[in-house]
Length: 268
Image (cartoon, rainbow, N blue to C red):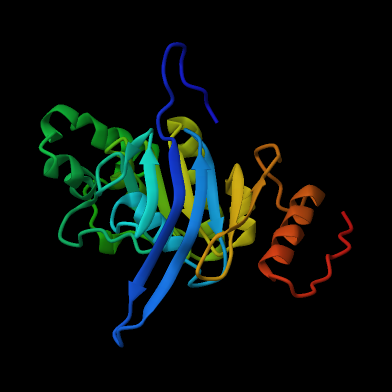
């Protein structure tokens, strides 16, 4: 994590305080997704959220994005209440959701144009296309891009607004294994260059460890924070290193939630 310059206050601190959230189903019954969730994320941190499918990880991300509101509790960005979506919190989904009728340049520029700041910030479009390595494809259309390229375009589109916090909802889940690992390195590079707070939902334990400063494990719904683990491994991280594998085994034991799972006897 890169520290703020002298005299600057680092921005991008997220505070989730005793948050609960329920949803009403078609039959009228109510399902509680989150129950008393507390989470503190310091500015510039990279956090991975992991837990069973349907445990409320994406719900928490949407609350931080301002797309939904909590039933109770508070969500804060740098001390200010989160009430609705805004450009300070970017969101990238598993599907890149690029506009098929716009070329890559116009997809990335879309947010600036919608906010009516494109004229003074148009140089940012080329900057962020360079950041994700797509400057040569500015005039290409989404159907001409590979899956990894489309996801990099989605990152550029979110980052061009210069958000304090980037929220990543399984953005690499649809990619093949090799492209996914390359994209993990891209995300780390961008995070280190931009010093943007990042919160990423993933089902992949290795990915969570490889990317994050902390791995936050959520319990089955209604979700709470089961445990919060600092990843004290130097970067770049070696997936085959004994410390990496031991941490992986520890998280898998937690995710088993009370069942018995033997830790492998790794031989390096």
